[in-house]
Image (tube, rainbow over all chains, first blue to last red; front, side, top):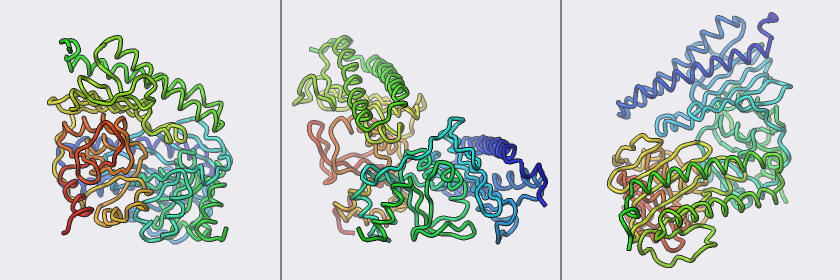
Length: 264
Length: 264
């Protein structure tokens, strides 16, 4: 049974934001102390260590503060989660690990807090850019304390999309999206790209291979601004296994689905 | 004849940086005051106004302080430049105008100051990200006052590249680069993408359609860190007309040229 403390979502969100900023400080410190040692083996060890330590940090904090909550993380070293009963924190300690190693920027901490499989709280933190996106069910989404407006329906020919060039080789239908949109970007960090859809910097983000922890935080944000997110076939997202993704402005979503699957 | 004041490059660079930051403040202020009015016509007017006013600002400052210097700008409303004799400031007041309008971030002010066609000073300023890249011939390149190291030769299979997905439809050879690199990004702002090559966040940036003002600042930065930049055919860059571009880490440049043009 969840007691009232464990269901006080505003308090939980404040706590999660505080821990996220604390983890961000830790990641920055680790990166700075590693600037002098830049062999590939060292970089790989660094990202592995930081990933594990940030997940452990959250696992300990959650267990101590909200003992009935569970945590599903990328590292998965602590417990296996096969269902979304009760409250589950779905965490990616570093989303965008290639950027982390190669760019020392453009990576994020992503957290989605789900109640019986439904998103309650979303947090996506661009650590180096110092932008914290957050949301709480029914209360809207914010970036650094500023409220994000509901998304107005955009049209594809005015839209900026985001997907990896590699996906174009796997599905040539994406070429039609290149031709019918205003432009295509790619940042290599799913959680942030979903946050960019939520704040209107992008109008759609598409990927063919994402895990629950890549998308759980961003999906919560999108729910609060009227964004749409499904898998590439248009089916509801699954937060227990890997899947494809279309996360989009509602107007652009409909046109993307039409270009990919439908007849005009 | 250029007098000593007009050839004091350190003084010129300091001055150019100061004007760039001042122009950045103006752009931010214009963007904030336009948040309330977001029709498409208004956005188009905003970018046109800001482009013109920033170019006029630099034109007046340069004419007043360095009367023999000339300025080549995107707006080109002031004088036509058909040669690069003497000292020419090659300015893009807003590189990444689509991002400016759509994202309110990820755009740059770019300046290259050239003496007899050779880059002497480079400045690329990410206005919203508050990152100022700068260089002076023979003295290296900096980002926000921190020195950028010379680029060590990277290999393509470890490289992060950047190009617009649209170019893949125009030249299928780019697909080979997608397959043989570590990843592809796209930011939609040439001057910043060249600066990212200079600081190692990217290993190559490719475009099929750029003007002198898009590349003049970034090329100056690259010269100072041992980066390589030519057009897509491998010919020297032309700072008087539009051309293609490969700007890259020196090791990655050689492999990119081999994949596109050569036999393995």
